[in-house]
Image (tube, rainbow, N blue to C red; front, side):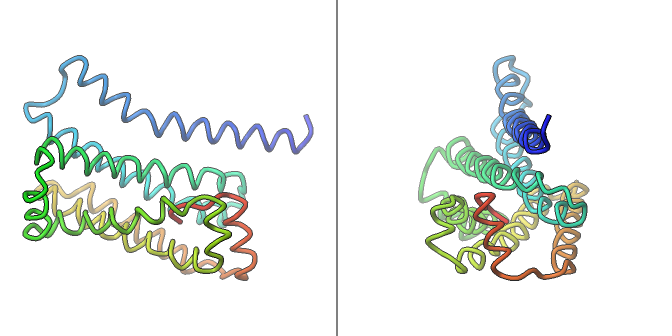
Length: 215
């Protein structure tokens, strides 16, 4: 098999793995709903599960570029956009589950929660920040925005920090995984800052070639 064909096969396998990993939490949850295996507070379990997976995929998307630059394994960059979109997908489900199951889509109650409960406020801000990043993750938007695209997508680190803070405040007593998430985010940020800065032209070309997303 030619090197090009081998490389393409690896990229397809990587993307297939991301798809399986991305859909597994939803399938797992659907199975629990179908079998009545949810906890005594099913609404809370669904909300928390969607939120945790949103954070997992968000951190995974941030890890792609450091992994690529540290290991030289270039095909991994092809998974970045998909991981970012799965992160936004689960974040949107997390918010919709909260709005629908917890607040019955009562807008006044949702607004009151956002204004009066800090952990909900920071989570909502993270959702707002990530929305334009998900929308502009296509190659067409990358070309339209030019250098502004990379500046816009740096907001992912702000949104990620807010997401970790939201998780930390929400879990209250058992903060172990929230602390792990904070350490992972801090480590990724430190690696990203410490890596040699490439020329803007090279970075832009990389963004266009991979489709970009939440990086």
